[in-house]
Image (tube, one colour):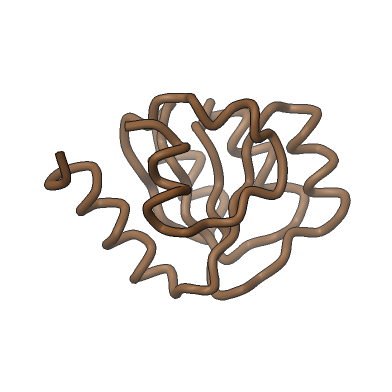
Length: 113
């Protein structure tokens, strides 16, 4: 499933790297503790978090994540968006809770055809 499909189906707002939305998502990870995400997420994951600071881009780049979804109406910092653009990491935002976003993505990836 592509990032573009997830963005469309969940009504996410893409804040940068629109040209990367054709990337395939192979899994997902949810968490706010950066060391946990670094230790347990995988390449191709879509990462769902409430964090908005610059370090989320470094982690997503290091782990080769497909993209980052920031939840609960949080807005990424300007520096975060600039670094994400430079690194080619799409950042999307949602007003939904982390629980709702993860559930919807899981359903899309495993049950929607």
